[in-house]
Length: 456
RNA sequence: GGAGCGAUGGCCGAGUGGCUUAAGGCGCUCGCCUGCUAAGCGAGUUGGGGGUUGAAAGCUCCCUCCGGGGUUCGAAUCCCCGUCGCUCCGCCA
Image 1 (cartoon, rainbow, N blue to C red):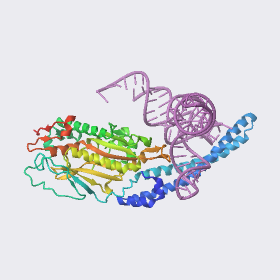
Image 2: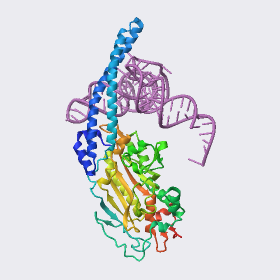
Image 3: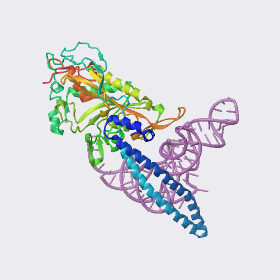
Image 4: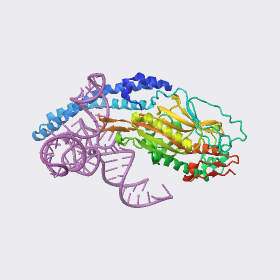
């Protein structure tokens, strides 16, 4: 949600920023401004009547008291009759105001966040890190260091010219470890059983990540994944992505598509003292997505499923620190990919693809050998004050000079590990000629096997 | 799933239709007093919206007793719906 006062003060700036997203936000903005104006016409009128009522209140009380003693109720009755009229007018005004305010709120909720001025018009590769090849197939130097390429360097790698075709994750895992067929039989397409060693790989991945994040000040959280509508409106998923969300109509609950929803809502309605910030969390939860209209053969296996587990970073910071925090979350995502030995690139996401709540978003895309391309593994968004304003999360600093009144803070989110997609990348990159898979050293202390035997 | 009880300021807690503009206490802040500390005395202490202003300060009005409706000239107080908490019964991984 955007700041009404700011919109009122400088509507053209907002209009220009929204125009970069494309779409018809300008009309919505005009409607918001018109409703706001109407609201501010009605308010003083109604408040004047209220003041009358308050003033008359004591007088009526005294007249009633006097009437009780003297037995003469005429004065009291006249005062009441007079107020009856005022009250009727106030009631009519109140009704109109309520309608206008409800209308204002739903209209305001339709406006997306203003994009960051640096958010590009097209997806832009910021940097590419690591050699997009496969250790186990010896298509890459044994101890390849981190290689950085300049922004926009879209180097083409000779993936075709190799002795052995890389296998994809389904071939490497085999139907006993990623069981799509039985998953489909149970729940439909895009559901899978994860079995055997892969379960320990997931748990190791999760615990390695949570431990790392704890060291960086992110408190581990397992949140509810069934939430009320408010949480989805508050985080900007509604009204916007309803076709993507599972609902339980009998209970008025929704299955979250990411723990971002639950983490952002954790402090809904709270006023936090500046000294408590930053608040950083790492949520671990399943995520549910309907993936309506996402049919496509390129998303075989675990890449795009209706249910997956994810470790999500979430930060509450003062608005002026949001950009630094965004860089920090991105750096953690890159650190994780690097330590897992995955080549990746960072993409600055185009304004028209930001989603309602983000002002800026970076995706980290890992190289998938079987597809010969980079695919999204993680993503981090700076949602500035957009979510906090909807959720009523504010920062206050009484100790500051001058004292800082309660105002919305900034929220940011970033994927630490999307388990399914990370497993895909780990399998494909660790594969050896015989079909076995070497897993990253760092996961072993957390219970991951050193090597996954070849699929039967 | 059934039955009952409850929700008041940072905290405790009074308040069953009208000077409640929410008593009283605790905590906190400031001041006075004071060898120091404690005690004592005095003042302050929810959040939000509108108007005025270039902005801030100030001034002013309104709202705010879990949330939303209703009754009434007037609601913390009465009625309805919802949320959350507690107790009992039933069920249960």
